[in-house]
Length: 162
Length: 209
Image 1 (cartoon, each protein chain N blue to C red):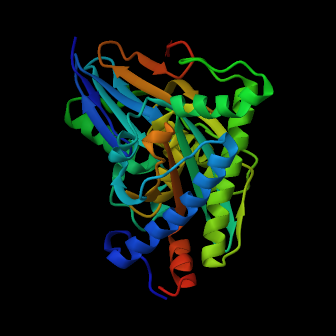
Image 2 (image 1 turned 180 degrees about the vertical axis):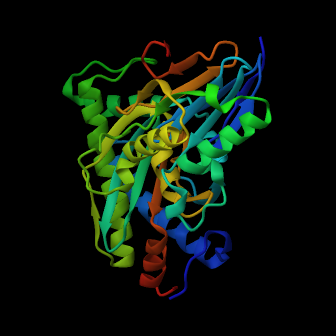
């Protein structure tokens, strides 16, 4: 068994076999796991906001869907992953307080985050193999470099593997 | 108008924000005391500027389940407010409210049913309302609050919305933290998150802009 490396909020990390990556308590944020099954190079980003180009304060590239995905891919390629083999699994983007009907864009941020993640993965040509997004509960995720399994834990729900 | 910068808060601005927390939470503690018919004290509030990674761990651990009661604010100031309670405190509050109605008390580890959640929502409504009306009286600003929304979930997930609101402007979260006293066995946090422009509005309303 390898080490389980923690990825914080607005953070991203890359690992190789036998390690795993985890991020805890995703709410409206989205966790994006990227995997190359040949080299078993694995990446995980925990993004908070959809779009770096709309922000003036955007130095922290791990915070945004666009730059976060780009940087995770860059670090994975540096470790020897092949971009054409990369696949994605995503989780999070919840509407924690069921505020979907509210008109304020801020409180519908989960939805915008999911849309931006999907759009950016498409732009990068990376297929999404599985997703567990939306609804109104928090998620802890683990991506295993061994086999690319993406494990999702939530309060009061059985553990899921996608 | 003096623009408030998160990294350059003067000690006077800190004091003012702390005083807001003091008055708001003082009023909330009084409302809570009346509600549960027992004395509730609070600690001196803290104004905290934390990085994203420190935020959830400051409250325990990212995965620890907590009760979060969320309101969005509009009117003269924009922002949001979260009232966070640990599960033990939430059960105590539910019991003290429902015991007079002949409802059997919750036991340690018991899940919240519909009735418990609705009692908690009412408690949240009363104490956040008390906090905000004190803030409104002090600043003479019109603060309109949304209907509160309640969720029991991982602390990390509950704290996402305030963290994301600050994520739009920087990499730190500024909040006024108020905890009740341990003697009352109630541990709760108020997290008042005005939008950055609204801090200026608040400080100006107090003649400190």
